[in-house]
Image 1 (cartoon, rainbow, N blue to C red):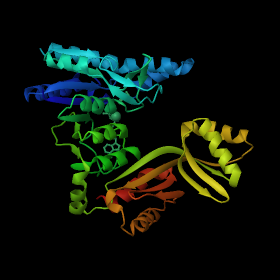
Image 2 (cartoon, helix red, strand yellow; image 1 turned 45 degrees about the vertical axis):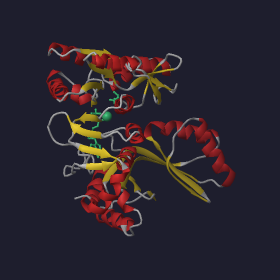
Image 3 (cartoon, rainbow, N blue to C red; image 1 turned 135 degrees about the horizontal axis):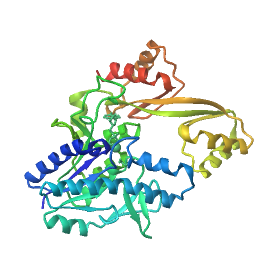
Image 4 (cartoon, rainbow, N blue to C red; image 1 turned 135 degrees about the vertical axis):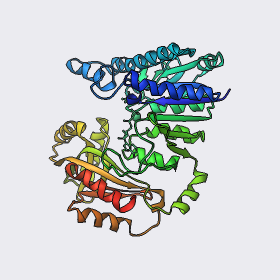
Length: 397
Ligand code: ADP
Ligand code: ASP
Ligand code: MG
């Protein structure tokens, strides 16, 4: 049995006309002889009735437990999957729908951000062997205790690659509303180019730095099994982006000789500057960790620490530090812009080029950091689009 997993994001299944394109892709795969698993996201984007953000809004007025929140959120993908399975059946295709738990996705117990620990694909495989297209609700699984969990925002991608690995699929195709992985977010940078081939590592880095076209965990799972991964546009027949293994990496680097693969951004962040030393620094980090606040972009100097948190964690961070008697300086509405690329390793002059490009636009760098493959700059959020454009022009045009 040749298995293909196709995952369709929210915009791809938004309504009947969008679903037509989905049906076309599924039917084409069937015609090519594949046993097809279709993973779906909730229908539509922000504002649509059954989409994840709308379901979260419903809970604003009350206090749902993390367990109940996950039960509610799981409904979005269930609605979407049942509707798509029905549409397939109307086309004469034998189809069935399975929730994440029914498809055998076993996760840990971290509600809202659960990790898949195991897949038991027996039922799914059986349905495929009976010749059915199996539609699976993305973004959800079940803990060992039998609780429904969700996999974190954007987690339907993870469902797709986990099932791909479990079923030894020939490939996983992630269908979305853009042509593939691009050199920058096309919403910010109209001239961004689609990248034809990338390594798992490159895509993982881009995704971790904010290119939300694919979930980084989905890439990690595919990488572990060397599973070919495509990112394609539901609404076109473009070739998309193929993500392959590291053996190809050297070839890409030498051939392309391009230090930067792409430009990414994450916003809004709030920068905290805390004028404390030694043991007080340790106390601050311990207290923030105990509150489960994730820190980003951390700089420790003898006389101060600087770090950033997501805007939604700003109040909690301030309160936690205040409880210790600390009065941090805060800079809200910041953005982290990154130049990402395996090809920058060992190449001098990249930081100079970044500083030059940003300075030419009058953009101040509020903080910076680097690794072998990434240079991050913190800028004001209002300057982020111009920063992305300037760096894209310099490295990716
Ligand atoms: P889906 O609902 O299909 O999962 P997402 O909204 O999660 O779609 O991801 C697709 C979006 O990712 C695109 O519309 C695009 O704006 C955004 N994006 C951000 N960075 C990139 C990038 N480097 N390449 C392609 N798309 C990107
Ligand atoms: N519906 C979920 C979200 O909006 C999962 C997904 O679309 O991948 O995050
Ligand atoms: Mg997504």
